[in-house]
Structures are given as C-alpha cells and as structure tokens.
Image (cartoon, rainbow, N blue to C red; front, side, top):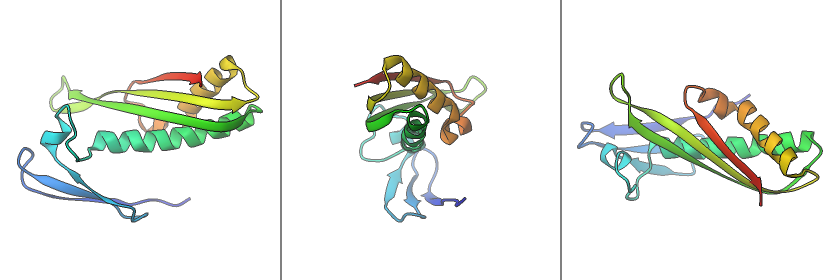
Length: 145
C-alpha cells in the first residue's frame, strides 16, 4: 500500500512564528498555519492540525462507511460526514485533543435507520483514521437524511 507525504516549514517561536503546510503527495495545496490562530475561536484564513485531522477523518470515515454499507447489502446515494476536533489544555501540561464529534447523514437504499446506525458505528470502529486516534474520545451522530 502507498504512503503519503506532507511537509511543514516553520519559522519563529510558538506565539510569533508561522508556517506553511504543503500536501506534497497530491500537490493540491499549501496552507498557512499559526499557533495564535490555532488557539483562537476564529481560524482567520489559516488551517490547523485539528482541521487537517478532521479532514482526514471525514474522508476516511466516508470511504469506510460506504464499504460497510455495501457489505450490509445497502447502496449509498450520498454521505455527508463532518468532524469537529477540539483542542484544549492537557492536565499533564501543554495541549491535547479534547475529543472528536463525528456526524454523518446518509441517503442509502436497502438499510433502515437501525441498519444505518449499526453500519455507521462499525465504520467508526474500523476506519483506519479512527483507529489511529484511539487516544481521543470520538462521538458519533449518525442518521439517514
């Protein structure tokens, strides 16, 4: 299986520095990062590790849920997955991810609401990004649209 590469170039200190994250493998973009913007309520046009984790998680989760639904005999018409990744103080010092709220709405043929909820939970457990984030509490809100 392939691996993928990203790079961050950073200059300055934590509070006064800034960086640029490049998605090297795909070449689809380079994005500004800044700790003050990371810790602020508004992103102000820069991304953060938490937003990039959220993007990775929703992409992986939607793919995995599509597979699980197919295995259960359903057919996906559409899935919309959102993730909100929290950042907060770590009691041990520094910061930590405080949780991930994963929300999915689906239009699916061949599964009722209970079948969709079961598939959604199974996908949450089997998604490779969810597995990588086992140290973070992940909640799931799944429903048919």
